[in-house]
Image 1 (spheres, one colour):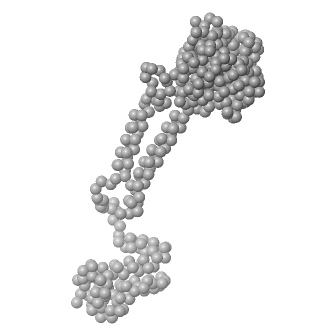
Image 2: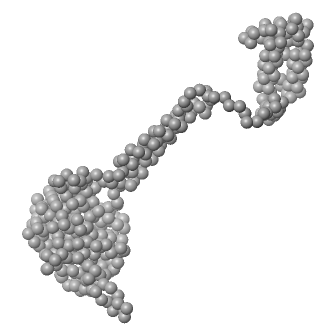
Image 3: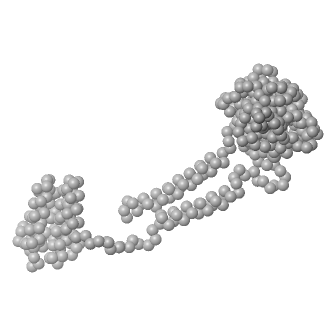
Length: 397
């Protein structure tokens, strides 16, 4: 078995394992949740550490929470003079939203950054979320205490419309259209970047802000972002900063329709088909069924061409011992056949038979067919000539 054949099957299985590991890595990367914007301990451009530091400097007791269970525990310890902010709604599952709605009825205010319509419904907020398409800067056009007339907020990426039942909802940062004459028209008809909903039996006072990046470290100092954030989050002596974790994406509905899986339903069968295809490829390409079959060469190659080619290879490699061995073995094979000897007869037996057929001493014959290798090209040529002469003189007795 050649070295290629010995390494072929292990190499194929190594390739299969490498492909499997690569597939798992791709799945892990594809299912990894996005980064944590507004992380209270994040000091990068998307983090919220700067806002937390300013709130604490203004006397606000900021308590960070990374799960709905920790948030519920913090709410049950004390809910007087408390504001709750849901800073990263990308991991805010509807089950966690329902739990927060039930446990936060006694707080002063809930602030939610860029929630979806499903999350708002779980919080029992009568509002609808609509995409903006790109983060924009909008002026407030309102004065509601936490927002002053003329405030400008950078980073609004979601707009909201209050439902028909929210007659007392206050809208700020309305999205407008530009008329042909340059005037603004349709103010508020395309939703607003901020909604303030009064407290009801289903939720406390709630502020919905269509921006997450607007309060991040990178832009908090621009325009009126910092002032707006301080008014919204600093109105109570205690702030619970709820940063939902990946575990809070699991839906806790009692219907059991959702098992909390992060993978689309078509991923498992696709992976199974891909794995089966890899196994079949490994079996087809990595296993040789049956013995090797000799096939005739498509062209006829003359023996002299093969001999000359091998000779050039030996000469290029300066492998005189190997070339001498080939010449001697070929001579012994031909003389065994000519003198009626068997292929397995030892060299001594063949040398005695050659000596008897040629009349040359046994020691001289042994030096020719089994002597030391030649040391230079001239000696190799003499050896070839002597072996050829020995074959010409050897005849069956």
